[in-house]
Amino acid sequence: MKHAVTRIVKCTIFSLIVFAMTTASFADDDGWVVLFDGTDLSAFDNGRGDDPNPGWVVKDGVVTREQPAGYIWTKEQFGDFTLEVEFKTQGNSGIFFRTGNPRDCVQTGFEMQVNKPGGPNKHSVGALYDAVPPSKNAGVDGWNKAVITCKGPMITIELNGEKVVEADLDQWTTPNKNPDGSKNKYRTALKDFPRKGHIGFQEHGAIVSYRNIRVKPLSE
Image 1: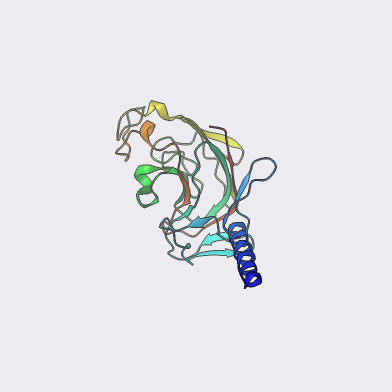
Image 2: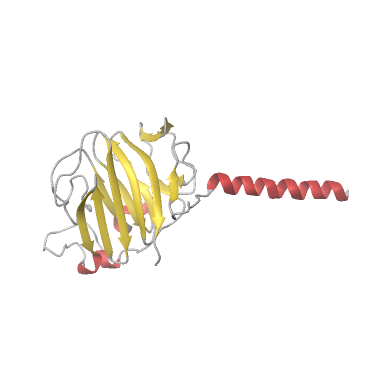
């Protein structure tokens, strides 16, 4: 009986270790956490604790929204960080970050616009959506690399090696209004948006692919 109990305990511990290894993200020596290593979406769910919709297809190191699939969200939340991701798209999509409530993502999180080359305007590729246009159209056909850095109130976006957005959220003091006087869709002033939340990839009807997704938490 004693040996049987010991075997059960050992098996249970082993199972928990395997579960943790297959669901957690690990930081490398430089502090980068791999969110998508090209093989599975174990770092993500659908925002309600369930596995991502199978419309998100993983193949050849790339995850692609091929069919209507809903958003996908990191299980972990991140506050101050640098996010690196490569994307290729046939149309409108977005990368969400610092999203407090995935079920109300537009009103509780920030979005970098993903789209085909165009603009620049507040809805073109690389924009801090509806808030800050990119300084130039830095998008290309095919694969693009975005680097999003959040540190306190500061958000910067680099697209294909060029800084296209630098925003101080503390300047957004009025709901539905940008510092330049233009309107936005946010019912809460952006300075009061969550400073920590989930990273997500949007479902917006277009075929869009992502690869090499990693995040580096920064000291807060």
